[in-house]
Amino acid sequence: MSKLLQTLVNSIALGSLYALTALGYTLVYGVLRFINFAHSDVFTVGAWVSFSIATAFGWASTGSPWFAMPLVLLLAMALCAALGIMIERLAYRPLRKAPRLNVLITAIGVSLFLQNVGQLQWVFGTQPQSMPPVLEDSSVAELSGVHIRMVDLVVVSLTIVLLGLLEFLIYRTKLGRAMRAVSFDEKTASLMGINANRIVSITFGIGSALAAAGGMFFALKYGSIKQSADATWVLLGLKAFVAAVVGGIGNVRGAVVGALLIAFVEMFGAAYFSPHMRDFYVFVILIVVLLVRPSGLFGSSTVEKV
Amino acid sequence: MALLEVNGLHVHYGGIHALKNLSFSVEQGQVVTLIGANGAGKTTTLRAISGLIRPSAGTVRFAGKPITGLPAHEIVALGLAHAPEGRGIFANLTVDENLEMGAYLRNDPEGIAKDRRRALELFPRIEERLHQNAGTLSGGEQQMLAIARALVAKPKLLLLDEPSLGLAPQIVQLIFKIVKTIAAEGTTILLVEQNAHQALNVAHIGHVLEVGTLVTSAPAAELARDDKIRKAYLGVH
Image 1 (cartoon, rainbow over the protein chains, first blue to last red):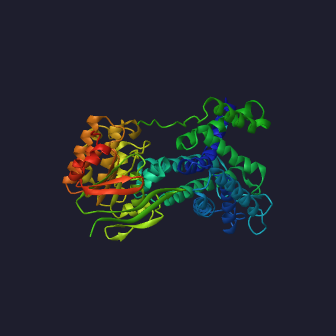
Image 2 (image 1 turned 90 degrees about the horizontal axis):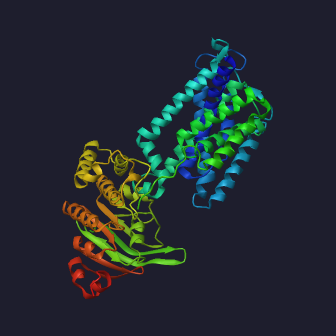
């Protein structure tokens, strides 16, 4: 029983992390109909940036004050938002009218660029680092053998807050309406006076900020950060992509459900079958969903009447 | 000075010369219609005016300002609304949200509320469906929504592209009745239509387009009486 509950808790915590990163894929796809393969690298940069900020403040060795975590989080999100906006501006916007394949290949190029620049000695370097504990890692609650860690509690509640804000933004604000309008039909949106380029920039900014939060929380939860081209970190970004596809790419709620689903499958598979095959379960889910519902769980085509 | 002045406009699509040296103007308060067969360049003209496509030569002036080559969202900001071909409804938004998109650039809540109320008075069927997804509307309702949305923008000039396309005759009647009302209330309209009969009935001035060239321009009533026009576009033999 306690094993079951513990696995449940772990799944929700992991699912929240996947969701934060999956949203960036799905938001950008929603607006531009294109997979930003460099998104998982923004996630890794988010982890590294939060490490660098926390280290610069000297919180690696000494204890950290209460505002350390929120401060590092906000700075990392802001920096990665700027990075995302810059990537779109410099790499993707000049190709807006080019064939899709060109943009896709450029995205892979940007991904490789970030991975390799990140390994330069004067950037993040090649050595794995341990994340300064800007959040006290204690067990906040223990119920019949189930441990709830502080970091998990914070991660899950912050994820819920960020998702709530995103949901509000998309469905209840003028900016959100403009994002949905651009996503449906960029030309007609421009006839409403919407500057589509600005909406695209904002979308990249939001997606990248959420990925930064995901990267930082991941580093906090597992305590260490691998080099930017390390396979385990690349795989994390890839799983977030799988989550977005499983949920139905372009669908915000779908991305969250997809993230929770693959986290459950991964964690329960690891706990009850074999922990060595956890990545395998994730991709089996992907294959099954693509076979049964190629547009993902929540992906649907809009009904159009003539 | 005319509200809209189009001068020597040329548009190319790849190797196709879609508009050839097009010049006409729309005076404040007028309803001007461009009629012509499928492929004559009517839609292209509207798209070149509102900035959806770049003309290869020529100038467009709107409200005294040169707007040639400006991006669509900047042209729209000067007070032009374009209800595009195919209606351009955001099917993923509700009807109400579509109307709000029409007022995207406006910052006067009272003015918006007033124009929204007026648009809904003109199209009561839209009001009944405010909270529905716009994609669930019938074709006629979508056309009504497209016009209502353009009116909420309170445009100086309204571009209407084929409002009758694919609609049942009674709906076409209804829509043209409302276009007439809007015009009578003082909105300047540039109307593109294949349904020349209805278009000439509401317009003051008519221009006839043939394969990208303006061939005839005259007061609408005169065009409606012209034998050649009647044969070619009004189905009278």
